[in-house]
Length: 210
Image (cartoon, rainbow, N blue to C red; front, top):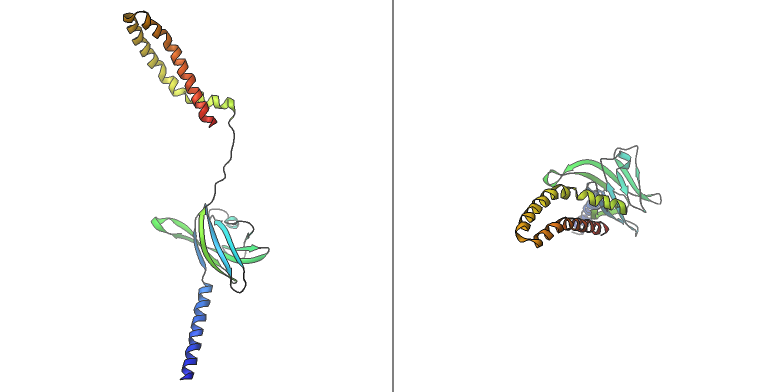
């Protein structure tokens, strides 16, 4: 009976060890696309060390430049093996990233299949996020703002003459019946048009300044 128990324990230990070894040898799969960053957490198997590596992958670039790893980690392309990259820190290799081609996901979207492996670390994907776009701030010269404002008023200047002419004809017609007040209003119409144009220019200038 004791022999049977010992054999069962040995068989169970062997099976558990084989399963654990198989689990450790399985790669961490990342389905990547350009413009996204991926965070891989590495926990040491036999040493109390932890790393979080952030990287991106763009398969449309040249082979050697497809993988980009954020500092303080470095990436290196293996020329002797197809589509294999190494991630290291201080010359110590942490893991390998293999490009395994394209894979279709939801709604037919194609993503890059990456297989991340390591002999010294347990790995898992802990997050992904969109890479921040670089924005360039520049100031528009004051004189150029005025030019832009005038250009934006071109449609207004193309339409306003006909409207002003029709309105002036109507006012002149009414002025003939309303006497002095109607004539004064007809004379003020061009001034009102100029004032409206200046207000539009000022409003556009405030918009550019904001």
